Image 1 (cartoon, rainbow, N blue to C red):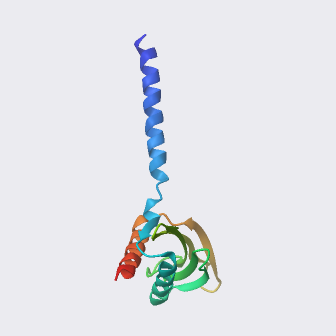
Image 2 (cartoon, rainbow, N blue to C red):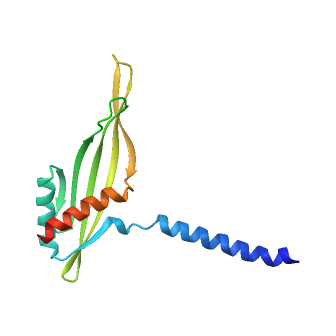
Image 3 (cartoon, helix red, strand yellow):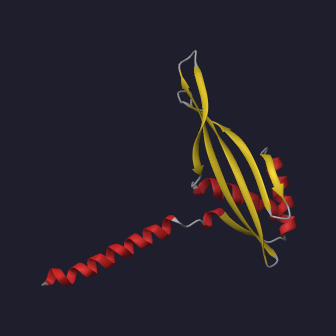
Length: 149
C-alpha cells in the first residue's frame, strides 16, 4: 500500500528534475548583451572592433542589424590531425528603447587532414554552433569595454 503512494511522488520528482535540467541546457543568455548606445552607433563600433581584431567581414546589413565575420584559429599542437578551425560570427543587433541588444552565434568548422605523408587530404569537419561560454563572454566583454570607452 505504501509503494502505491510513493510512486506518484517519485514520478513527479523525476519529471521536475528532468524539466529543470532541460531548461538549464537551453539557457542562451551568455550569447547576449545590452549596449547603452543606439543601434547605428553600435553597428559602426562593432565593425570597427572586428577590423581592429583582424576578423574578416563577410557580410553586413546596417538596416537589418546583421554583421557576419570569420577568422581562422590555428591549432598549435604538433601531433594532431586538426590544423585549426574556422569560426564564423553572426552578430544581430536589435533596438531596445535607447539601447541595443546584441546577440552572437559562433559557428565552428574544424580544418582536419588525413591520409599519409605523401597523400594528405584536407577537409572541414562541421562542429555546429559553439557552446563554449568562455569564448562568448571574452569576446562580448571585450566588445562592451570598447564601446564604453
